Image (tube, rainbow, N blue to C red; front, top):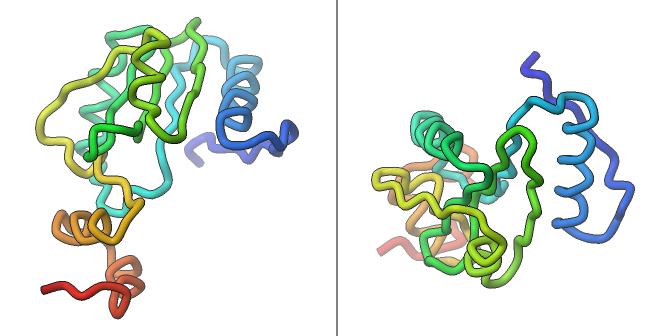
Length: 145
């Protein structure tokens, strides 16, 4: 209903190649559409915060949001006519900045920044508030003192 489509991972060369492939597919079918790649490990994500980030990103050819740790990237966007150029992975914040993407230093978008790579990250996401399935799955995984 929202226009989402599954694209086969024909490059089979990892996350960045898959994102570049998907972006190229979108551009071939909808060249005037903006693009965004959003991490899947954002269990506290709030729609209003994501909307703020996407609105801010629209002011730049390419933009990104650093993760809560300040090392990685949780969202990368590209305006119509700009390439996505994904460089996710360890220290992706520095790579995305070096590639010319603008960092979005927005306050109040903690749910967009809080990815989950460690137990402490999961605790932080739980503190922000997660859905019932994530909360149930987290039960027993952590000691929540």
